[in-house]
Amino acid sequence: MNNSKLITVMMGEKELNFQVSLDDWNRCVNSLQPDNKVAPMHNFLVNVAANDDTKAAVKQAYDDALTADLFGVVSKEFKPDVEFTVKKYKGGPTKLSRTG
Image 1 (cartoon, helix red, strand yellow):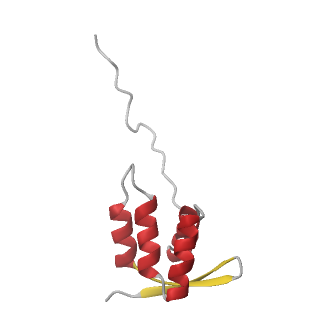
Image 2 (tube, rainbow, N blue to C red):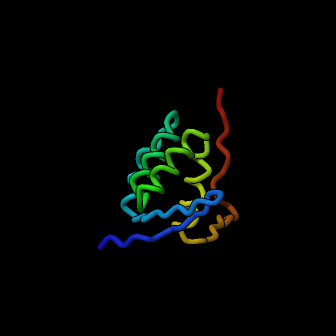
């Protein structure tokens, strides 16, 4: 079962609605490349836009160089707020010494 989450974002006076599923999210992340980030973010936002007005606003955001900002807001709302920490180990990995 692929549940989706309705996310509403205000961009200025415009209300944007996105219907985001885990499959949508995973497809976007899997398509990101070191030299290609904006296009996958834009495609994700267009694909999850819940209506034509939101799609038009996403296209305007692209023209205004705001795609990454809008993507960031939507992705932050989609993912749960979880804190990660790395446990430090005594006697963990040791430095490798160079020879020669």
